[in-house]
Length: 390
Ligand SMILES: Cc1cc2nc3c(=O)[nH]c(=O)nc-3n(C[C@H](O)[C@H](O)[C@H](O)COP(=O)(O)OP(=O)(O)OC[C@H]3O[C@@H](n4cnc5c(N)ncnc54)[C@H](O)[C@@H]3O)c2cc1C
Figure 1: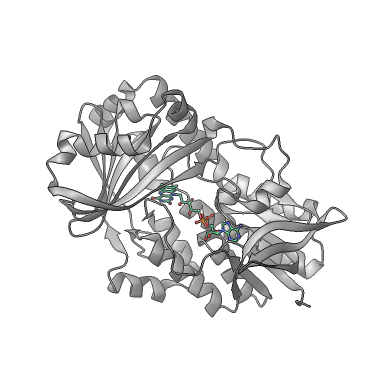
Figure 2: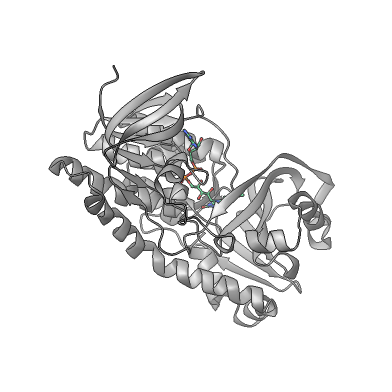
């Protein structure tokens, strides 16, 4: 028989590994499950704002992050550039965090391995297992059923944290069927790595042109002449326009401003697509009897920028705090765990609403991007959101 743990965390991405680290640091018995072994790739733009790095510093990861930078796995950022349909450009500077933390392009193969290792160093136990569903007894989540190498196991805990990303098996089982993200609050995106491209040193680029709104294409350097490139678009418009992400990438690379920077045509590799669920959809539950959802499993991505790593970490820290107190009191009811949902709403909802409003305005009035970039430059709300909510 498996022993009963205090907490099972399903998914060892940034959200799950951070929550596991906080709880293990406080002395809880934490089992961290992921279907993959680390290091592993995750489809992402890899841009991590200084706020997220600062949060990782707070969890005790400063040395590990500086070491990853030394190994040249994380590429520090100084600036970002927005480019509009008519080719207007605005450049803005990233602020360092109060602790001096930088923003980075940190390929997820490296970033997630750093955070997962930290969770293990703090005392969490890791197992490779594909979680199939939560175990529910008398209306209470009491563990999960999971498979490893074809064998099925049951793992039990006082609380389960669903941190298993946008396709979360935990969310699918616990959220009522009418509580799903609509296509207006979802996006699809393609990510590739490219070698032999003239990158702008320590500067990331966003291209917001008419054909791609509501969405954008990006070039995020990972080093000299190497970048993470990609594009994403809101799902309802992507479907209505019968778009194809691979053709959209070809069109982006054929744009004169991009094409002239490809050396010998550029070499793309590791091309992959994935989905995003925005935090702008209202009234979704993230707390249940004996379980909570965090990160992409809860759907917390910024609807304008597509940034989700920072929000995942914020939700992880808030959830860990509430769960630690609930363990102390022995109360794992939905009412008690809802304190996490309320705290998360307070921390993120205002910026989600503002970002979604701006996203829909750009869709209805695409010339607004030209106007904001050309006239207001670094002072526009658009630039400020891209700088802060990456
Ligand atoms: C194309 C694209 C570009 C993006 N660019 C950026 C960006 O530049 N910056 C940014 O901040 N955000 C970006 N995002 C969003 C960001 O990737 C997510 O918000 C972030 O990964 C969420 O972290 P998470 O830990 O919640 O989930 P994930 O990172 O998805 O981790 C979930 C983990 O759960 C595991 N898992 C899944 N199902 C199971 C299961 N059944 N059993 C066991 N384990 C399971 C997975 O293996 C994974 O390790 C982008 C997203 C996409 C799709």
